[in-house]
Amino acid sequence: MDKRALQANARKVLDPVVNALVAFHISPLLVSLFGLALAVWGGVVAARGSLRAAGIFLLLAGLCDVLDGDVARRLGKSSRFGAFIDSMLDRVSEFVLFGGILLYVVRRPAGFELYEPVVIMLALMGSVMTSYARARAEGVGIECKVGVMERPERIALMAIGLIAGYRFLMAVMILLAATSLYTVFQRIRHVHRAANQSS
Image (cartoon, rainbow, N blue to C red; front, side, top):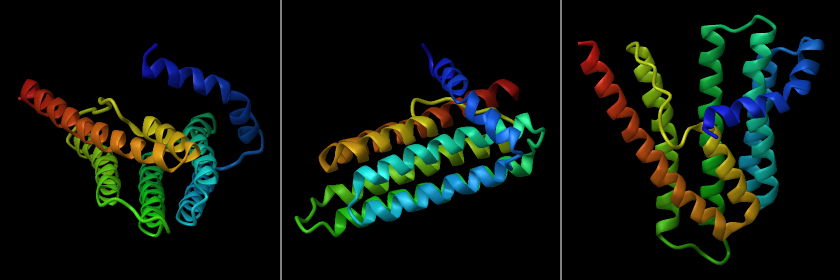
């Protein structure tokens, strides 16, 4: 089963929640802001060392990230500005979450290995550049939803890593750094091919 099919199935599971939000006319922006609040709090508790709680908050924030778009479509409130704000809030949540993890690592009483903060920064760079590559591609009229590590996968992996504990989290950070940077390369290659075909 491919990623798109998995996402479609996940949306079916969340349909009752979407129906409830639509029934109460909850604004999609409010759902997005609630998701941001959950992600920010996840970053805060991660910095304090509560990794498992941070993972749970991140999973809930990820659900909001799915729900806001579905609610917007059901209420007929989808717009380019809404998509823009949603993307901006996603980047804020990523910086806060990675920042919280980084603070936890460098402040650990047991100390840290030099590679650990470097890997976290590379994972953050890959995550931001993956989204930026898509935004710039779409800015020049090229759809760019390719790559092995898109945002849903990043959220799921980070949440699993946080819940599983420090050592597993660092393994996840290494995987995120490698796959996110590879996704950036995939998107650059995709845009290059698409641009050459249209010229």
